[in-house]
Length: 199
Image (cartoon, rainbow, N blue to C red):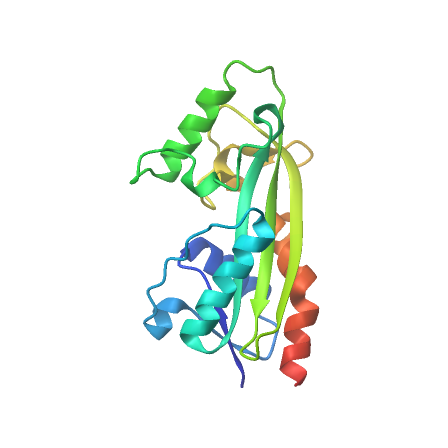
């Protein structure tokens, strides 16, 4: 059975991507499974470029087909911030997800609601022969000033779906993997993974 490296150190992402790929006849492995300790500098100017950088780096280290993602939160009132810097939004080097959410809400404080926003995700599949495929996904919502829900990670607890009356942090894994940006991106690259399996 072929192997696919889920090229992330984020346990939340591993859980989501593993669930999305669970029906495929492939052995999913993580960097931890392989003893790989890799922190890729996200120097790209787009989500696609960062996803490519990470997929290529993990593929080179593991020599396995590698699936990486780059994800961000684009808030309209802040001209798309935090965007590509979503993970590095708070300036402190040891900032937590809670610190980043707190700073985002502080920066939105002078703007009228609703604070429309979207999660954006690019996923890249890097194959050992050098081929690369990229796909994208997004989901629309709004930022709310109070945290709700303990599922998920990052900005999930303040990202609200008006039609569901829930935040991303209130969705269980099955619900999240029906509508999330990451689910849409992974579903959009499934054809490439399936083609790899047929080779």
